[in-house]
Image (cartoon, rainbow, N blue to C red; front, top):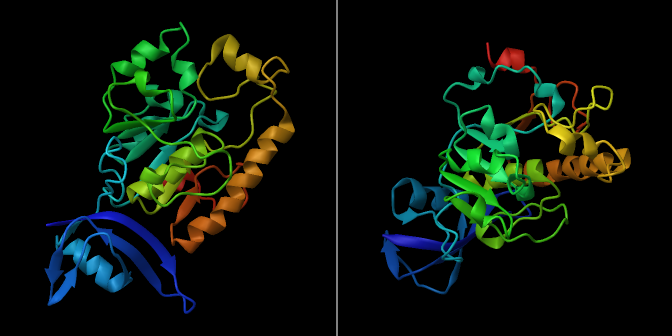
Length: 277
């Protein structure tokens, strides 16, 4: 069986989707031979035929420490962020759905994957780091330096806060915060559609809450100049994430925001009460 080393999807001028593929060894199918270290441009129907008939494993092996993560999942994913809108939410409603949790949200929901871009919160002497290590996930994705937070931690290359999305985890990602990291990771894993929970892009200043869970003194500091919180910084995040919508549209990824009051404006909003009837 052949192994795909590299794969990038694009669209031609006519709007037809194609894939630039590189194989790791010589292989053939239907009288057509593929050679290693050569880029082949396959239209979507040919590419999907190779994948669906088991001719290739759609895994990336560019970074041997990364592991085979790209395109390993199918179906819908639910990303649980940390917005105050989830205060009092019954996470049992998620049932056995595919859940990707961000940071401390894992303490409240059974998650298949965890994204910890702010790994420093699990290095503080408040017990959250030890609690994290007792939980089991398929993988814990974090940025460089966070590998010690969990036995299944995978450090992804951080390409800076550029607001772009990546098509492969092996190439690294460009998140501005944990929520954007989780969304890009969900796309790379192969999930579609993707539903967002707790993506408020605002804080509850009146209730002095930065997240739906209790952050203690650290959380209170987020809302003060002590931590450097500024409303314009949150608005900056919102603008970047809204702009990313066009990049996901180009890749035909359907994303829905399950918070009707979210500050995000680009993503279609649905009432979670209708989704989790």
